[in-house]
Amino acid sequence: MRDNITKFIKGMIIGIAALTAGAGTFAIVLGIYDRCMEIIANPFRNFKENLKYIWPILIGILISAACCAKLISFLLNNYEAYTRSAFLGIIIGGIPTLFKVANKEGFKKTYLISILVAFIITVVLTFWANNTKAGSITHYLSPIELIIYGAIYAWGAVMPGMTTIHILIYMGVWAPILTGFTSLNFGVIIPFGIGYIALALTTASMITYLFKKFYGITYYAIIGFSITSLVMFIPKYASVVEGIIGIIIVAIFLLATIGITRLDKKVEETKEINERENC
Image (cartoon, rainbow, N blue to C red):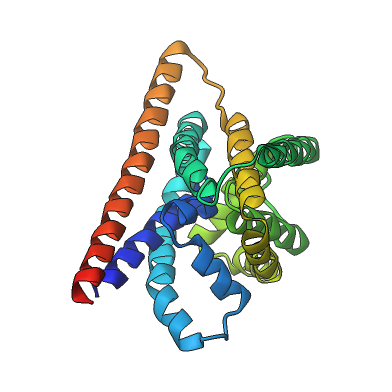
């Protein structure tokens, strides 16, 4: 029961992150990313065991996403600079943990090439986004567009560090998509979900393979996506006062992310001690 409650709380955190700076990075920070990717890649292998592991996480994600989607949509529409500041703090707070995880099997200078490649990919995608909709808010999105946006969003979710939300924000479509979800508009939910699920299922196996065969290179690519995404999330403040408030928000969310990471580490250490004592 305690383990399920812990995973439920992790799911709630990831659900909120999925609406903000991307779920993948937080899944790594909370130590459940690798297992979740393996389950998505092979859902029917050890089905009962997989279901037992993942159901509290999924419930936590669904509840937090449902509860917070309307709030995030409101904040993006009315306080975009402050909302971006919060996203920025979340990403910065997760980077130290990514470095620790990436260096778990050692460090090689060649890993730094992955950061450069990730930088180039992020810049190209952002340039494409800027020249596609130029940040204009779109009120009607066709089913084909929604499928594509769902796939873009899914890529950022399954590939941690690559926060593709900033691409959707630049294209002016993230707020309308959130509005569609909060108003239970199935004309938005269904095609977006199709794009999301299709890409997640087709890429989970590839990502699991990359982690197993090219651990260091893959994790440093994730770090590269995270670092370059920082630039994309930097808000434009209208005044000095707004800038000061924005910096305070960055600091608050940065410290909150670090605090969550440390708390989770203590919980896992306590769990391991208890398991050894029971043995």
